[in-house]
Length: 65
Image (cartoon, helix red, strand yellow):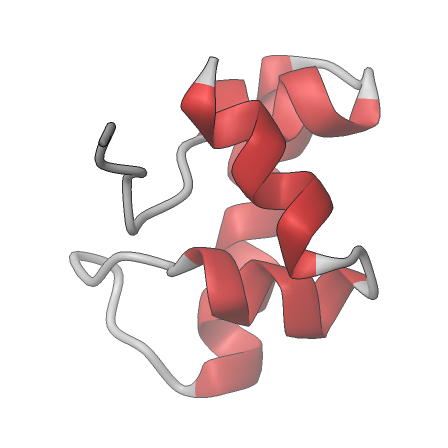
């Protein structure tokens, strides 16, 4: 069984949304502010799914590849 990463990176957002990696960095900062996280803390796949409205199963498919 393959392990799926727990955290989201800008490159993942780029692959999921089709937008630029710079947009991914901006979006991660917005999500961190939304959840009250510090700049050094990670965003989980569940938090990204909740914020973006994208189904968690769809996100995990992108994280597997």
